[in-house]
Image (cartoon, rainbow, N blue to C red; front, side, top):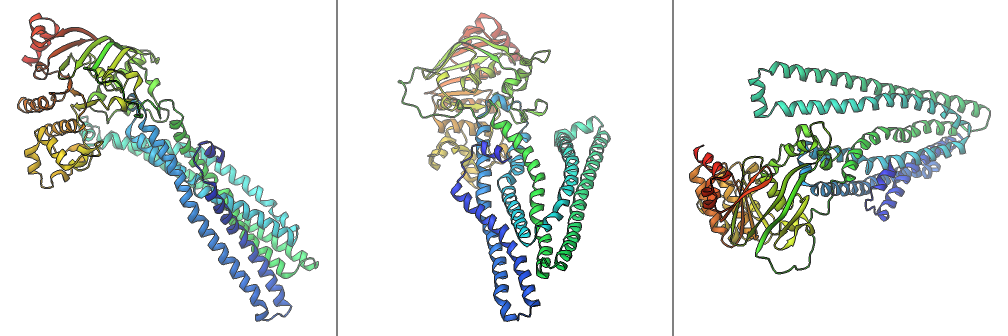
Length: 619
């Protein structure tokens, strides 16, 4: 297990570790001197020594006890800081790996499982860096010190410890039964958590009641509870066996020590004080042996957590360098074409190509995906898997070409499922074309990391994600130098000046989880204000007004027109009102361009765009 920890490649400061090991060894070895000194004190007292003669030995006993206690406290204090530091170093690496997954991978992952890796599993791994190493060193050094001391008194005392392997065999057998039960208990706990999660949210409770399934869900939960009770009772029974075997072993060792001591003392081979010392050693060996044996369960439990952490760290779909922005030399002068698609095709990967072992769970994934991410999540990945379940790719976009120039607005129109969300994902660098080329400000996007692409792109989505923080924090996120004046000006440009004046805490107002204190239109305007602050040359509008009524939609579109004057704007929308303002329209069907031109030209052509426009107007 410690070899696995070393292979993690963590930065271990051995200059700090060695004093911890030394203090731990001293804390284990120094108490061994106490029984030896007590035996000498007893022998001296039996020879008629007075209290004053014994004071030096008594003082030495006190000094050893105090020194051992101080060494143990110091070892634990220093060890905790180093151990938890290593644990959090691993957590930081895990967090960084998870942040660098492809966005498609998130579509296969239950957010609760993702959170569990960084919390529950990391807490399971903690003992490998803290308690287990110290207890192991303390235990083995203590056993070695006791063995040496007993051998010096008389080697026959070591024979009594022949009972220890027998006791350990019983302990190992019981531990095997416990370990076989642990996995089942984790599965039951996961089933209970899934049952609770799937039946106790507001929408879930409504569904249960509509289906008149309250009794059935209670019965299912009761079955899980009965299984959990049976497993817990079984584990406690085997733990009782371990405790009884361990206690019986040392009771028998005590009897043997006493018998051996009496025989040796009566034969004149050892003194009465040595017999007493040996009996003290029975109690003294119990703690280090318990530490050595008792680390098996924490190590097994930590190993389970480490298995899941290592699976993430070793996955080819985590920690991707293509995600994070890199320092780049100044490029060529900005191109007039801010975004250009040249014969771009895209093939959705099968789920296995983006899944992360121990994290991906299609059945309950994607609950946190919104906007264009929701459009590319499970549907396409499942289609890519094929009807027979084989992990085969599926072609979705075919030979797409268009461009957006600075000061120009281009609309991508099409029915649901035609490929509009995939085009947005490609434009943002979140996925890469299977063939063809995408240029962002004249630079081939294949040469850029995803965050490099985002230097040029601002996105206003249909579902605006706001953090549970202040309005100021939400606006300035990622814009470190934004002053309150800049934030206020951006809100005014987005049409939120009146709302800002009404907020009692102004920019310090908490927006609530996912911005629930604001209406849908207000959240959209906050997203527009973000785009103003980020001041990037390409503005992408992803169904930005789809949730609004006609009056609010016109207000949002007017605000967008205000900030779009000197930017390239890519609009993806169903509604005719959002498309009609575009300079050019690209009509997509089944992943291919079927028409392109101005709104008036396409209406006059009476083709597919005109048909979709008529259907939208009458709906």
